[in-house]
Image 1 (cartoon, one colour):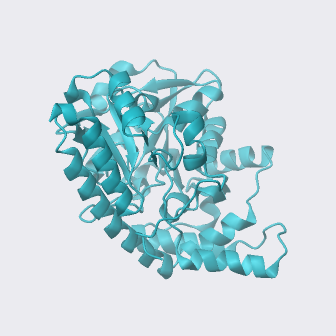
Image 2 (cartoon, rainbow, N blue to C red):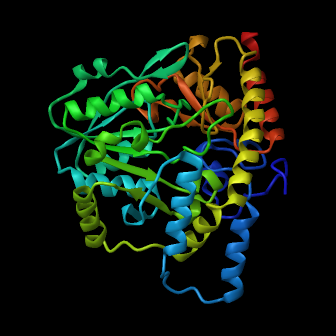
Length: 390
């Protein structure tokens, strides 16, 4: 299998394609699904082989003896990120939205506020509000189209109820790889305001050539007593349906609190996800990710070149993720108009920028993790939909 090979996903209970008509008003064979953040690629063969081994065995009982799983995580973090992790730091959750929710319940109380650097992944605000907590938006500033950290500008947004800050690193949407200096600025802000820092690093393997991701635990080791790290195989290897992720906590007191929440909610891992993740975090998985990023880099360049030919539309220069963040403000159109052109005329399903919070209103997010022919088609459709601007 190559990344150019199309895979028909409609009719497979795939939310990205099977919910197109109910949500966007067109059928899979009429348009392009570029919204949900999963990929149109099969995972590496080593993951498929792990599942095949389970199928051949034929008994699907409770998972036990997680030593190989923990060793695989430790190997990956040490070899790919230069981060030494101990086995007893690792908790397994049902994905990182679940991990985020568990952190909120562990370290805040109803009525407390949680800081989000907006625009940011929309599920954060959803789980914060559902837990009876408040969202404090600290908007990112833009410089040459790229999001920038300026913690001094955040002070005016604080209410005094803040107990936690959730960091998305690399950033979704916007694709920023935060510098060590920016990460340390965020860490210092959390110390100043006595905040728990939850660093969601689910995209940390999806970094483009020439960029270097630094895990927050390495950028600011002195804040281990207030730092919760979150990582997962799911985005990296396109196994989101496995619903598996890791919350990694070095500090014993923070670990004890989190363990209490896990136990109170009766959470235990699913065996399919454990086997898939163990297989993925391997030399074979690493080689696949390297090939993936080279391919996505080509998709990114092709998409950006096509968008650059539409007056008033600008694609943010991605440093990481496969999620293009496109600004339509230069067209002078209201969101309803440019959304209508993209979804009704071009028949492309995207994520609306407003869903990501303050600062996202003039943007749409496009998923580029697909065969290159689909990116070519998307660019052509967008150029036709905005042809009157040429």
